[in-house]
Image (cartoon, rainbow, N blue to C red; front, side, top):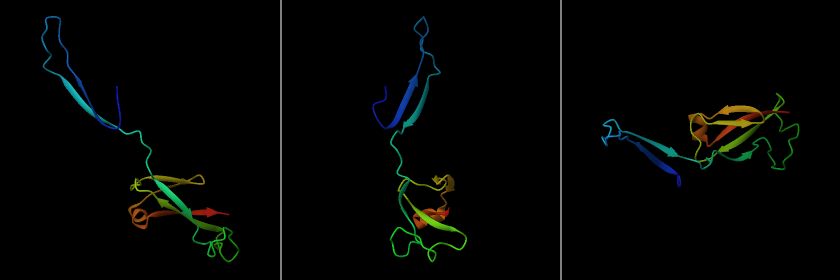
Length: 107
């Protein structure tokens, strides 16, 4: 039985009816990782210039969208997929350097 996180080695060998040990024993090591990853953090709206939680006509983009910046957690890596309002965004090296992904939110 597995008692916790980390590497677990499984070893198998066989003995025949005469007591001879099979020379072809086998080993495999697997890593048990059941802890959830810390992939995202807070969401900020840079267009909310006065921080009131309301986007007025001056703050809303001319294309009818606004940006949501989703902070990346310490476990996010290049290739992590973040879903924002049904749209998938794949984390890039540039996103990791910035510390967030930017999602365009239609209004």
